[in-house]
Amino acid sequence: MDGRFKGGYITRHHGRPDAQIHALQMELACRGYLVEPVGTLTSANWPAPYDAARAAMLRTTLGRVLEDCLSFASVQTRA
Image 1 (cartoon, rainbow, N blue to C red):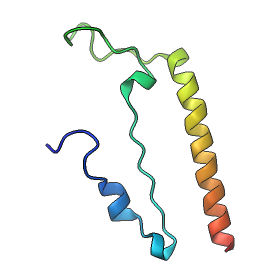
Image 2 (cartoon, one colour):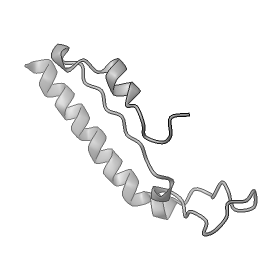
Image 3 (cartoon, rainbow, N blue to C red):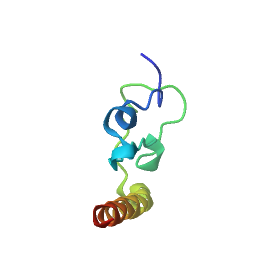
C-alpha cells in the first residue's frame, strides 16, 4: 500500500534510544540472493530460485552486521 521501504515502522515502534533500546530494520533486495529475470515477470521465471553462490557475500556481510549488533548490545549492557 505505501510502497517499498516506506515508513520505518519497526524502528519507530520498537526502538527507544533514550531508554537504550535500539532497533535495526534491514531490507534486502532480491538481487542479493537470486538472479532477477530480465524482461517481463511470468509464472515461469518468478519467483526465481535461491542462488547460494550469489548469496554467499550477502550472508558474510549480514553475519558481520549481526556480530556488530551483538557487540554493541553487550557494551550497552555493561555501561
